Length: 150
Image 1 (cartoon, rainbow, N blue to C red):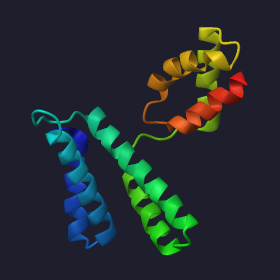
Image 2: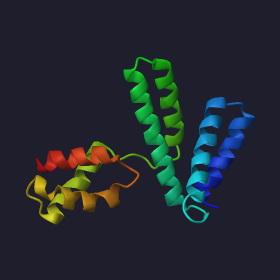
Image 3: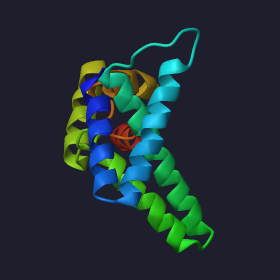
Image 4: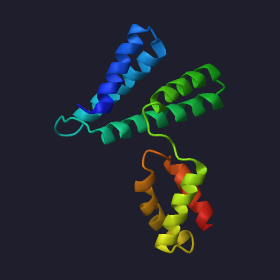
């Protein structure tokens, strides 16, 4: 079993004992998504820590998008709940890159590729994505590349 999945289960047990219903329900839903990913496809398999991180990243993104949708619909209480769940999931994700760190990575990739304009954005993104995987959202990376090239 992956260390991250084991940590999620341990934390779920602790949340249930502490009667922290928000944390317990969030971790329960997250573990369910991990299990669904394990049984998806032609045969069941155990996910690695990197694959569990991908599931956690997807879940965190769902919470951010749902919170934005609820906020736009004037449902502040539901948006707050989604944000709280997202914060719980974020505890298990690697620390996000700061704007300066992201800019430095994008700058070195632009120099390495020799990019001269927007037509080279795909080359730069291809080089940057593996370096920032899980530490910066794709839209944020694309915006940084656009601002550097544009």
